[in-house]
Amino acid sequence: MPSARSRAARPRRIRHALAAGLAAAAVLITSACGGPARPDSDAATAYRITDKTPAAAGNLDSFTWSLFAEPTTIDYAYSFDYPPNQILANVCESLLRWNPDLTTSPNLAASYANPTPTTWVYQIRPGVRFHDGTALTADDVVASLRRNLDPATASVWAYPFRNVQSVDRTGPMEVTVTLAKPDSTFNKYLAASPGTVESAATLAKSGKDYGNPQTGVNCTGPFSFDSWTSGQSLTLKRFDDYWNPDLKAKAGRAKFVFLADPTTRVNAFQSGEVDGGWMVPPNAYDQLRTGQAGTLYFGRNTSVADEVVSNLKGPLGDARVRRALLMAIDRKGIVKAGAGGVGEVAGSLVTDNLWSEAPAATREGLLKDLPNYPYDPAKAKALAAEAGVNGQKIVIATSPLDSQTTIITQAVAQAATAIGLKPEIDSVSAEKYTTLFTDPAAREGIDLFLTFWYTSITDPLDMYGSLQTGAFSNYGNWSHPAFDAAVDRAIGTYDPAEHAAANAEAQKIALRELPWLPLYTQPVSVFLGKRITGVQPSIAYLYYPWAAEIGAKG
Image (cartoon, rainbow, N blue to C red; front, side, top):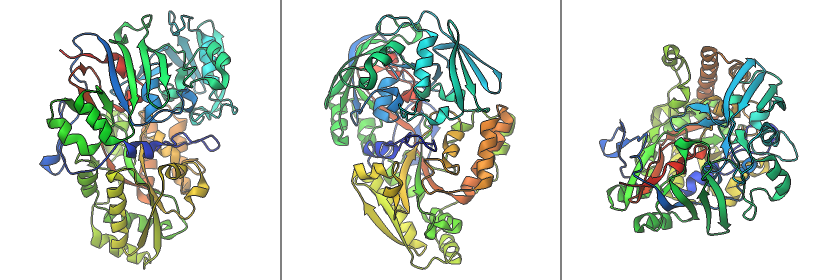
């Protein structure tokens, strides 16, 4: 579920767990095709990661794509959820680009430099035009970035700008960002929504109407905003003057249809009414894998399913009880029954691929000797008894989103019972569940709730920064001075080895203390109907112009 890490800003990930839940369902089945095998302990649940689907053989007039919900806006300052971001990724562009292999490269900034620890200088790419035909300038970049600094905007992306002192035009096509102190994550975030560039004139003209169904947006991407029929669909059209020939759209139009019901989405895939979609319901993996309507793929992800410990004043305030609870949860069983057998038990709060930028020579050593919590109900019960567990009540919040959510909640409740706690499941509406991530009052009396937490940069700090003392998304108000110090060291250094070492120290503390309980990881899923191909399956679809690569299947 989306969540913010700013101490004062609006929450960054308001719908992340809810979003992931709405798109999923549960059943024990198998999965997909292409790429290297990723076997589970049960051979029947093996799945494969695909880096890229077959290249398009030609162009298309149009294709249709499913979304599990209608966006409330496509204003980049308020977009951190699957529906708006997978649309915006194809319409608006950032200074840098987060690629499907989770690397970062120049984009609207043709180059950039870090001449001092607190200065970033961006050379703006010449020859780029907005969808209204006007030319991109440094002033547009300044206006776009400054919106995230303006308290009146209340951007959900305020956290990445927390150390920014100023954003200034320092040349005809040059922008300089000055930081109050070194921040190793700032530049990385400019490959995601925080780096989005919109026309300054459009922002001024649209005002509070910017990004709504009538106004849309005016950016530089391979598709432009065409139309938005509330409650039904949103359509993009190819931008013929797009600057990057390598990502020029192969389809004339992309139509996004809003299909909230998972069964309806799957039926639309099978009938050919919809050509494709991300976040395929797990209970449909088998029928889509074996059917004739198209192909199911899995790709890189940075998501971990976690139980958030939101009350540290009750029995879960003792780290021994949290460890006991995690050891009593049958996480392999959850993967099989709740995620269609497609996933792996999580050994951390972040996925392994977030460590790819750590020096190869040190990566293995940095991740050694991490706390490990194998499934062991007997040992878990003994540890809980040692901590004084004797029938205390805990409340587990959930929402009747789908069978995956239900299976996870029941497994956690069974584990709590097994170690001597008395769990009470509080099932609330989807809307009320969302407020758990935004309103501390809504978390009163709640001990645990589920999130599916993904990152927007290739750095563990995108997760661990969320757990610092006082961070908005530190929902249980957990505080650990050594953890805070490790995160601060990681933020403050640009040296890869020192950065990785500090991140690894923060990870060890988080896994020892377990402010959140990591359950499992699962890959990105995407279905492509038999008309289309070209997608690179990856969580980067939230920021990378994936729809531009979709074309006709040979």
